[in-house]
Image 1: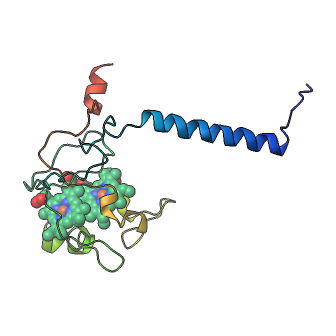
Image 2: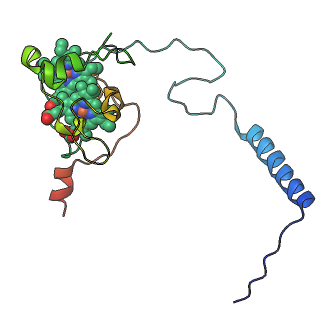
Length: 159
Ligand code: HEC
Ligand code: HEC
């Protein structure tokens, strides 16, 4: 197989890229009318609208069902002012193995003590340190966008 590969000389390549940029910029200007853009902020992007009120997080202390076995459980309590940074982790003062005796909170599961090679560590693994990467509190409100997520039970039933 002898395929011939044609290389554009540098100058014409530059002209092509330049023409493409001009095209993109002009079409952008033609179509991007700020009032027409459907944004989640529900208003023109050229105006500074009053932000919606902050919602109060659910604080019922009732665990929710998980939608599939590996789902990080959602947080059934408020986490306002719970600092998680280099020096402090408020979550671990209740949820780490060492503190569950006093706090009666569920212990972070053993996966939180595993490194990426599956070795068990004595302390919570750095990759599980920033809890809010995976766990989030909930608010009682309408979803901002349509969501057609199906939980694993619905999928099993539909088979
Ligand atoms: C003062 C103690 C305390 C602190 C601090 C705390 N929790 Fe909790 N957490 C609990 C208790 C107790 C429960 C059991 C349900 C309940 O009572 O709310 C719980 C439940 C949970 C659950 C649900 C577990 C499941 O199986 O459904 C998650 C997830 C969780 N917490 C994450 C966090 C994260 C993330 C933070 C930090 C931002 C945090 N918690 C800080 C005490 C605490
Ligand atoms: C990378 C994502 C991730 C991070 C970061 C993370 N978790 Fe989890 N967590 C999970 C997943 C996934 C589960 C459910 C499966 C499992 O147990 O591994 C879980 C389970 C839990 C549970 C329920 C344990 C049980 O046995 O019922 C608690 C409590 C919890 N996490 C708390 C925390 C706290 C506190 C932190 C921060 C120190 C944290 N998690 C950080 C993903 C994460």
